[in-house]
Length: 120
Picture 1 (spheres, one colour):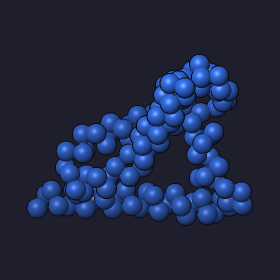
Picture 2 (tube, rainbow, N blue to C red):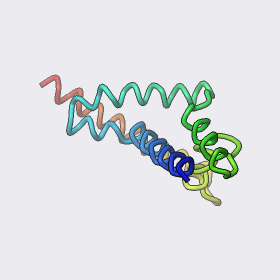
Picture 3 (cartoon, one colour):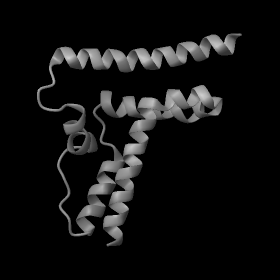
Picture 4 (cartoon, rainbow, N blue to C red):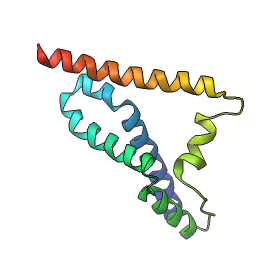
């Protein structure tokens, strides 16, 4: 039981980290110091995705699940848990481009606003 709880806690931590990478710029709007956490998180998230690195949180979760008597899973956290949520059946490439543009626009807007505000 403790291994399963550990794996579940690690799963929640992993999801929280991904949310920090995606939306941490909004925290920076409120707390300037969050920049010191958000930018390294973004750098790590981009490195893992762009360089196709294995995230250690996925390996740790799999080890805990196997120790708990559960089956681990193939692939990474995103492919196993988030891919079905992020890319549901019927999602078109055109819609993906629109959604990606929205994410990019939000983050560029947040950091553009911050740069403007900090210059004043």
